[in-house]
Length: 171
Image 1 (cartoon, rainbow, N blue to C red):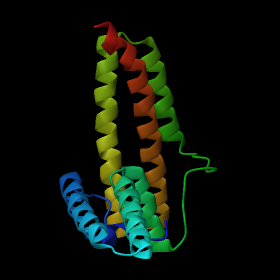
Image 2: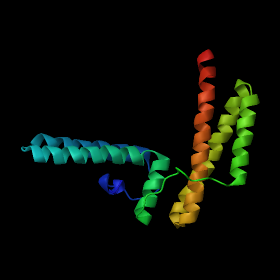
Image 3: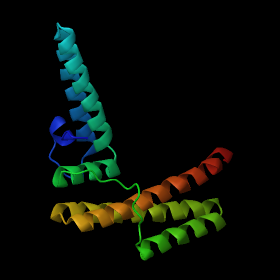
Image 4: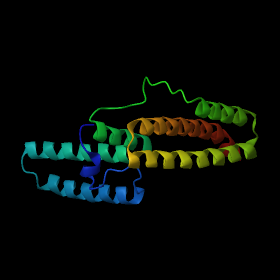
């Protein structure tokens, strides 16, 4: 991840990215690179173009995911890689909130589970806004704190969605 994926796609480096604009830039860049590849006459030119296409695909994949995009912004700002592996999250308030959600979800009927998912979605919107604000004022410690919170709630959302899938199929 040594490239600036925002620059590759002609975007300003910021956490809150318009998904439609991101996709449009990706498609435009793909078209340019496909034309460049078609004009390539040597195997070296084709290899270089293939690498650009691979970088573009990697960049698009990174920027379309909130958490990956946040880690990429941290890399751009700090010049070092950050990831959540090996990091113990110790915010007792968030941990308790997630434990309470898990407990409520395990005891809930299908209507209650849908309500809990809406609550979780609302919480994710707040976490997203907090993370966006942390990036705008760029305080690394606040960014990392809010990123870890957001990551925890995203993981909880995926867990709950997995629990809801059997309910969706039963209907």
